[in-house]
Amino acid sequence: MSDETVLTKEIAEQIVADRDSGAECDYSSITTDAAMVLSGFDGELTFHDLESISDEVAEIFSRYKGPWLDFPGLGSLTEKSAASLAKVPGYLGFLVLDELSEKAAELLSEKHGELYIGALDCMPESVADTLRQHPDVE
Image (cartoon, rainbow, N blue to C red; front, side, top):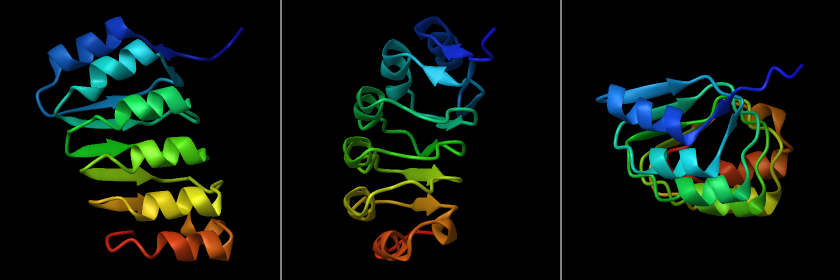
């Protein structure tokens, strides 16, 4: 039996309908349809239990215009996902992100707006140094 909980389009629609300013989502995976719904949400979004996202979901979230997009459980990003998420204009956070190529780090460092990387000290020095080039990285 799997412990996976899927954030579906129907759940995403309910989140948007129920929340005025923000949502904390405790799902281990997300469908592309759900991402499409949430990318239009103008409140804060935090995805506590997501440990990975597809390049397609990241591309959808590149259109997110809310003030806060947080992935505290995400441990790695592909270069394509990094390029997409770097387009998010507001806060973008990763608490445990520690698997990132130098190219992906370079793409994230070009992001406009606040960027939080909680595991900088757990990354290879060259990757961390690239991320530290971002003016608002923490």
